Image (cartoon, rainbow, N blue to C red):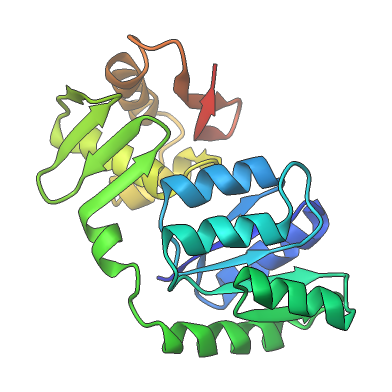
Length: 229
């Protein structure tokens, strides 16, 4: 499943994009401001990124330059209400590969995404296969080693798989039912708390010795990997 990052501060539009692109078969992460978008860009690898231009903290032009500095082959689509020729030229000058003006048609967006992905096939494959990173946390998939701020952390196979799924879905609330299905390959039984138990194991190893906590609870729903003091 191809990974797409959507950076869009209008939550209604971001939700439409996330739901629509998921139905087209993509794995979608969302950032609602430029700071979060920049952090996700620097700590993860995506097959394609969609960004608005007008955003809090960092605009789409700045983010596109960050994306292209990290990996010039990552396709970028600018999705914005600005439709003037100068805006489009500024977007392309920043490194954008395509440009769509709101309101947009999801089917057309999907078509443009597939054109760009065919142009850059499997461009993130080696990065994704070898390492996952978020904030000060690094997971080496080939050696199955985990480090926090350079310090190696020993995990059991199940703890490793649970952390891997969190790292693959940073800053997204993961329901317990989804974790049970994706990590344990089972349907969630509300009468058990095995996921909470393993999350606590991970917190003891990943967060306990550090002021900044990365694994957080979303009450009544599940858990989220995010950077927070």
